[in-house]
Structures are given as C-alpha cells and as structure tokens.
Length: 331
Image 1 (cartoon, rainbow, N blue to C red):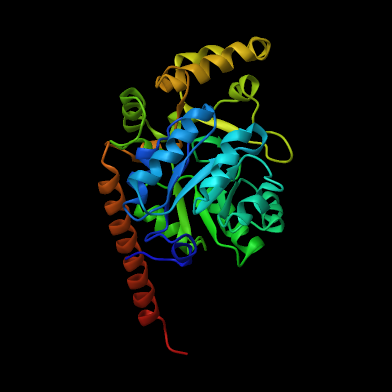
Image 2: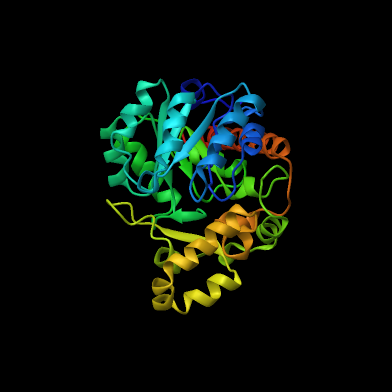
C-alpha cells in the first residue's frame, strides 16, 4: 500500500487529497474519497453558511475516517468557521491568503492545519505560522493558481520548509504524476480536476464532459474573473483563475472595464448559478490535466487506479536505477 509520513500525520491510508473546491463540493463527495483511504475535503468558497454546515453534519454520518474543511481567510464565513472549530475535524485547510491567528484556533481544538501556497515566500510564511502541512500548488492547476509550475515549485518549497510535509498540487492526474511528486520530495498530492470527472462529484454532466473532451491548451487563465470576483491578490497571495472556455468568459474577457463596473451583478450571477448547480454556465474550473482525463469514473476506481499506477511507476523507476547502477563502469 502506498504510504508516506502524511498518512500517519492525518490518519489516512494513502496520501491522496480531494481538493476542497467550493464550486464542486459536498459531504457525499468528500466521504467517498475518505472511505477509499484518502482525505476528503469540503469547500466553503461561494457557498452559503447553511450549505457548509449541512455538509459538515452529513460527512460525519457518511464516514468515520478523517476529512478536511477548507476556509478562505479574506472571504471568511465567520459562522461557518466557528462551526468547523466546534466539530474539530482532523484537518482544517486554508487557501488564497495568510490565515493568521486561525492557525492557533485550529490547533487549540486539536485539528491539523494545512495551507495552500503558490510561491516559496508564501510557504516560508506558512511555516512561520506553524501550519502542519503545506500544499505547493503549481500554475497548471484549475481554479485560482499562481505562475510557477508544479515541477519547479514543489522541490523549492520542500527545501524551504523542511521538515514540514509538502503536498503537490497542479498538473497531476495519474499515478505517474504522483510518483513524480514523491520524487520531488512531496509527501502527498492534492487533486481537483481528476476528481471533478467522477460519478460522485456534485458537478453538472456538462462540466464533466467538458473536462473529458478538453485538450490541455483549452485550460486558460482568465484575468477577468479577478475583475469580477477579486478574492485573491491581497497580502502577497496573487493568483489568476484557470478555466475551460465558456460563453460568459468569452464575452467578458473582451470587456474587462465593463466587467469591473458590473462586478457585483456578475459575481452574483456566478454565485447564483453555482448554488443552483449550473456552474458550467459561467465558469468551467479545470486545470491543464483535463487533457489527460478521458472518462468519468467512480471515486473508488480513480483511487484504485491512482494507487496501482503510482506503485508501478515507482517500481519502474527503481528498476531503472538498478539497471543503470549495474551497467556503470567499475572504478
């Protein structure tokens, strides 16, 4: 079984984390990943307090295994965060900003803290805050991402924050990617796009099919979303959203000044369609891994394939090293 120190820290069986995406999240989705030995995650961004609390209550009925609840510091739902602290989940995660004193609050209730970053400087600050795990998210990822690629970012973050475990995110959709992340020094992976294309994901079929039909180059950064919904970009956490094309994005990407003027209305449109289960009408969040995802599978099948592929990739790498060593000339 694939096991790293992250497994012991979080009490999970395999070092695979479901990215807690606010636009594609549910208790059922999180529990499906946790029940397969990974760490399921529940997102809060763009969601009502009632919906977040409902998922927190429900996930505890659907799984006895660890799960994470994610919060966005500069868009914090204070009531949902208080409820999270009351529940004391195994992991409380943050993204897009410095969580400040919320790290201490989470630790005070016994939860581990995980923070997603996109630069080395953010990772160093996270280590100073005392977080338990740092997610180094590369620019290939869907949603809000940075500029530096996963291959370049992960080893730098590993070196900068050692011995804090680092989780790799962005550009990973199969076991070969997981094996590569482990070779870079990561202790696990955080996956979003691959899991959106699953039967359990609470995403419209149009979104799932768009992912399986996409090429990697179809996943583009859309600056206009920062004009409409400027959640990131503060306190040293600049990020740009990545999505597959939609009619909404095509229209407003060419009218960014108008988008800024109509920010409230357009953001309301994104939130309302998301809450109504029609996310695909405005934004098709997806990373560049979409080009490698060709079918919608169950979470159980995805997890099984990821583990088998990772073990096979690591075995091949070990065999190659042994072969190279055996063929090296004697000194």
